[in-house]
Length: 164
Image (cartoon, rainbow, N blue to C red; front, side):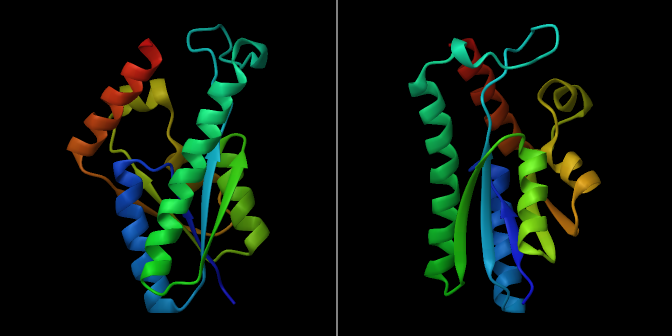
């Protein structure tokens, strides 16, 4: 049986992708596998942008892991409330690599994920998971655009988190 992968980070654009994935799962009867990937924060501004794990407290890593788990659980709960066969998986590592690996492991027919709708400069600074998945996925990919307002809200939150 084909599987539908929903990649989520709990953001507003991921919410739009969740609704589209649920709609597709209902139409096809495919099970929904919700994947949320988290990674050790990297030091922004370092020469190579690599992570120094000793610089982070276990509590910070726990927060990242919990945020990913909460995002996956919320999507699964929403799908199950509508009668969809849904499971959650939280993976640690680069989101593009982990989403594509999960799709390969599941023999997925399709990956659904959101796009924040950022411009070129913001994508350059923050990266683009959806673009990376489009280039490396072992199956089809559906990118669901968020609203410009949702992108600005998420960006404001990211900048505020990095400043603290």
